[in-house]
Length: 54
Ligand SMILES: [Zn+2]
Ligand SMILES: [Zn+2]
Image 1 (tube, rainbow, N blue to C red):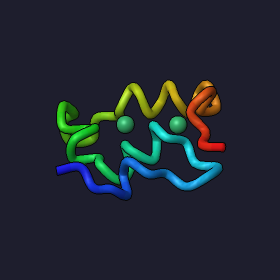
Image 2: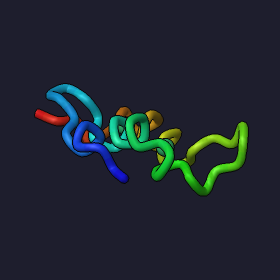
Image 3: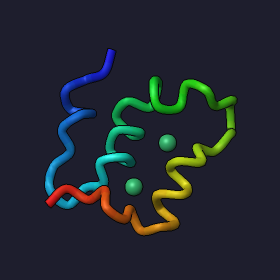
Image 4: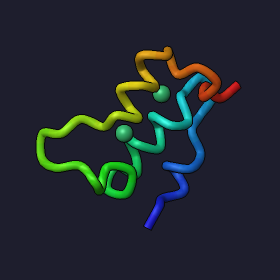
């Protein structure tokens, strides 16, 4: 179940990274132990472009 918190990032936060942090069980369910999330890596690499809550 996705928590409300995961879907409601506060201002200044990255929607995608927030969701991945608070709903990591869902967002990262395809990842094996110690495996990195490509979406999280790409988002950070692009400085969370277009994903920041204003
Ligand atoms: Zn992720
Ligand atoms: Zn991000």
